[in-house]
Length: 415
Image 1 (cartoon, rainbow, N blue to C red):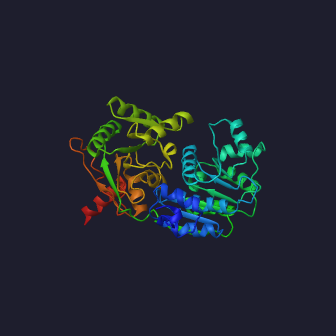
Image 2 (cartoon, rainbow, N blue to C red):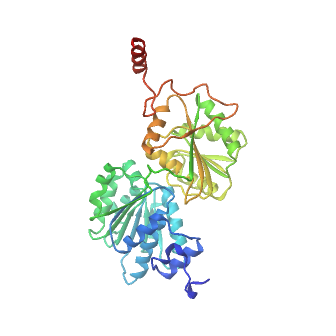
Image 3 (cartoon, rainbow, N blue to C red):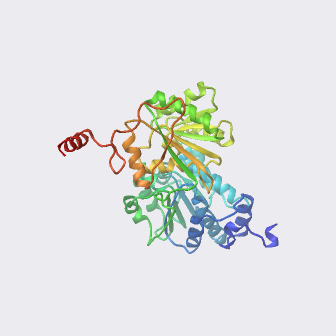
């Protein structure tokens, strides 16, 4: 049915958004509002500053994009530009957010400029001079424009910091402070993240005015749609054989394999190609053009296996990823959450498998303890590791140290 007939998709009918947005949302297949959208959109429309923590894949981008565009459309008399700034930690996330803008703003006259590194500065300046309503940017390049006075943020209505934890982790706090100083004090600020520590909250508190906090599906909560498994491994060569066997066993249409280093990422990607698998790799040392090309090819289905580092794959939102393999255990709980969040998105099911050798057991246990869960142990036929886990483990799941183990043995002999 058409919007003229009074029909709007359930995802946003309750929010009384602009008809052009309703039409675009329906065409994009938005069927049901997610929890973060239901709680966030009304507060954005009430001009509240927000800190929103919700798991990856929960619909955060639409949760701020829909009400932000609605406010732009309903205040079209304003001649100031730009009016909305969306700040993200990486180029890939910025490109992805622009695609969401193009989807939701397709029936409007709103325009958007991408301000990221790896793109021509002069071309960005020319596009900014066209007075777009929306700027989507990474911190470093936007600060360059501020310093050179090629962008004016003094009339901004709203600023959104997406993946705020990553912005701070990458050391962009000074750039964010520079950007906020260039914005008017009376603005609406929204901060979104899948994980946000108390330290991060403290770091960004000065950017907001009496913010409300919305927490949806905290990462400690188990995800019934996500199966998490552990496969024990002996060394890197054993891990490579396990990856090939697991890919053959799972037959996932799209898979992502995470490595902790660029060297391992490239070596594994080349090893999979040598086995005639439809795979490619991306990491921070590749040029922006190559990273963009590889992600687009993965998204379009030209190959089905992407090997990536955490920075290169942070925030990637690609439909149909049903398998995540951690070639190395993530170095932090937050990185693990973002990795496994590539699958089991928007209510779909998915599997995340971590390959764990003797040096990684304690880190894996630390992640389990933080998530308040235990991953299922799995064996791969013909590739069972000689390493079977620590001889003894503490109640926390970590391996008992040799000194403590010897002390226990001495006490047992005495008794």
